[in-house]
Amino acid sequence: MAEPHSRAIRGRLLTFLRAPNGANDPRSYRFFDDGVVLVKDGRIDAAGPAAELTARIAPGTAIDHHGGALIMPGFIDPHIHFPQTQVIASYGAQLLEWLEKYTFVEEQKFADPAHSARNAEFFLDELARNGTTTAVAYCTAHPVSAEAFFAAAHRRNAGMIAGISVMNRNAPSGLLAPGKTAIADSRDLINRWHGTGRQRYAVTPRFAITSTEEQLSALGALLKDFPGVLMQTHLDENLNEIAAIKRLFPDDPSYTAVYRRFGLLGPRSLLGHCIYLEDSEVALLLDTQSVAVFCPTANLFIGSGLFNYGRLKSAGVRIALATDVGGGTSYSMLRTAAEAYKVMQLQGQNFPALAAFDLMTRGNAAALGLEDEIGTVKPGAFADLVVLDACATPAMAHRMEVASTLEEELFVLMTLGDDRAVRQTYIAGRPAL
Ligand code: GUN
Ligand code: ZN
Image 1 (cartoon, rainbow, N blue to C red):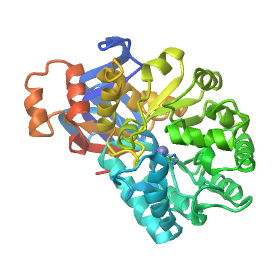
Image 2 (spheres, rainbow, N blue to C red; image 1 turned 180 degrees about the vertical axis):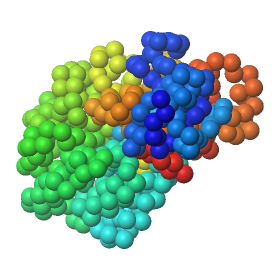
Image 3 (cartoon, rainbow, N blue to C red; image 1 turned 180 degrees about the horizontal axis):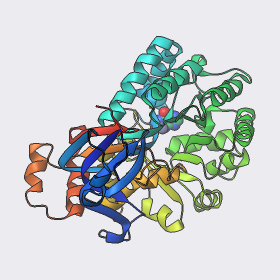
């Protein structure tokens, strides 16, 4: 029976069910050569073979035909810095120097609401151009930066997660919140934005170097007050960073133990980088069900080191994959997967295309605890989708002449693809491009 739908999106439809076992696991995904997604009120009403579902499309419904392109859930970027759109591509420094010389300089400009608003629009446009429909973003220390970001995302009905980067030491005074201000500001922003439309809040200590014990403890207490709120921070990214942590927290057995002591670890905690984890730290992440976020382009660009995916996966630690712009060098999750592949190759590990695409969609959604809402085409989920063309450039089209399987097509997309491969992005059922 035909029912009212705001849109039908038709093409080759792919969605992921679980992390694949090996490079070719047909039970880990569903693929319909001629598939359709039916959208109602911004959500997916049904998705499956066109032959079964076209009878449900009422006459006059807008139908977007995507021919040979692949329709899949939109990408999710679980670690990115919205105030670093003019920090990306900053030359010649490793983490601590890079923060001081470039990042903290740019981030101070976000005290200006007009600068924050302009950058929020640019950032969200750029995510959409790259097929990313949800991101977990660091804002600056200024509440106005988060306000601008959430307001812009809310107007687009895009599901974003963000928080102000809280610091009270070891950064320029313009970015340091005195006393309890940052905690009160975070609490206000949670009350205003967490659960407003599709927006969610992440309590955000930048990293343990830039917060005193008092501040970390207050952030842990804040997190306890709001069980649905997420937590994001950085962990074990760079050797000089770790040496500084040992000086600042001499009595804690490890960097991860510092976060644990202040109640900052848990199933909604996202720890960026996790390169230099000791075995006891792996055990803490596992115990607390915290998420290790792999940021390959940043780890290579800032010269930090190689994330050991195989070690954490076999230990059972939850893993997500992210761009970390502007330490990272691309907004594209396709470029990010390509660099993840290379980081793993350097360690003798494999990263099959099915695993990469599953992680960028369903896997990252699961890392955020949002697997029923995004990263899937299950009925009831938001109609956040990306449409990808594996023949988008001459080099891709030429390579695709000899590709015969879905796995090969996906591998071409992740190895050679970028924003040019994104034909359309849908946010809550509406074209974003
Ligand atoms: N550690 C603390 N702040 C940052 C940041 O902005 N980027 C990266 N890559 N690491 C950090
Ligand atoms: Zn980061």
